[in-house]
Image (cartoon, rainbow, N blue to C red; front, side, top):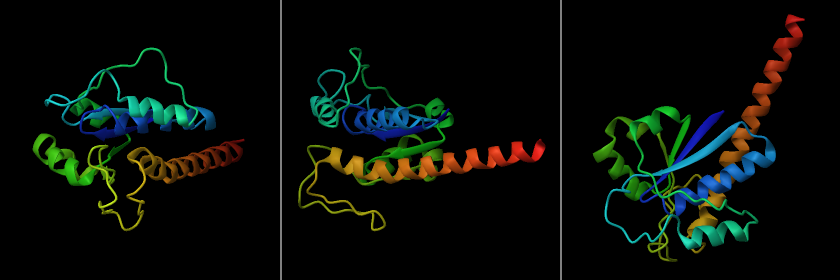
Length: 175
């Protein structure tokens, strides 16, 4: 099973939403990928109350996704997490690239950066730094994440179908 690792600041809101949404879709479509999420600054003082943001739970429920009774608390990313992941995505380039530079400089250029601001920073005056895959800044961060995850998921599905097709052709040639 391959792994995508979603990173945000506190592993409380955005990255947790991305993890649950991705895994829900992966199970439904039998994608051989799973998501995990971690925070880049879980060890810093924050306003997180509880294990996961209520907005994350509500956003998932609005999409028909029920999360289990046990919800883990936020986890700090480690070198082990980077090594175990096949793909790493930090959800807010403007904030997370500098965190990566100071905490994990060896990984800065090997991860993908999106531009999804945190709940308290998101406003219609924000702008998107990603001209290839622009997102509507008036949408909620969860809507923006869903828009970014859809093409990622589609690409991974297509790649999996291609790998399966190549495997099947190889087996036919052996017989």
